[in-house]
Length: 118
Image (cartoon, rainbow, N blue to C red; front, side, top):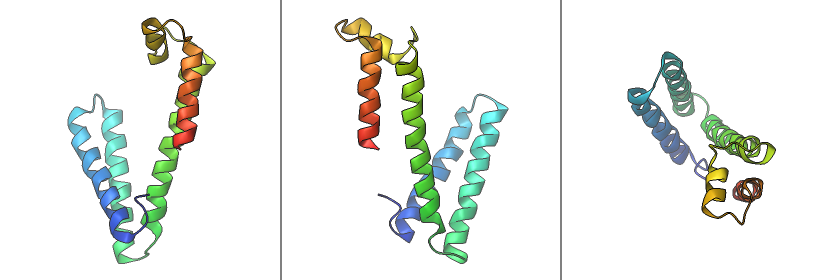
């Protein structure tokens, strides 16, 4: 949706870089700092390439980031709520609030919502 043009893709990528740099203030360990810096540098390189060398590359990078996050959300919902029941999960907390719907049923509902919103 936001990767349709050169300026919108640059705006989204620039926002991502800014948020990654802000999150460095809250990174709990060295691994998170390196991951955030790595993604910020790689995305900044793609922004430069978009404006200096090759035009539609940033659109594909933003599309890849969005698709990857969506697929990870579906997989994470499946792993944590449908495949197994964890007592500390959000699905189990919903079950405690409304005992008529089992945690796996809540997970299936969230999984269907994830797929529908993808």
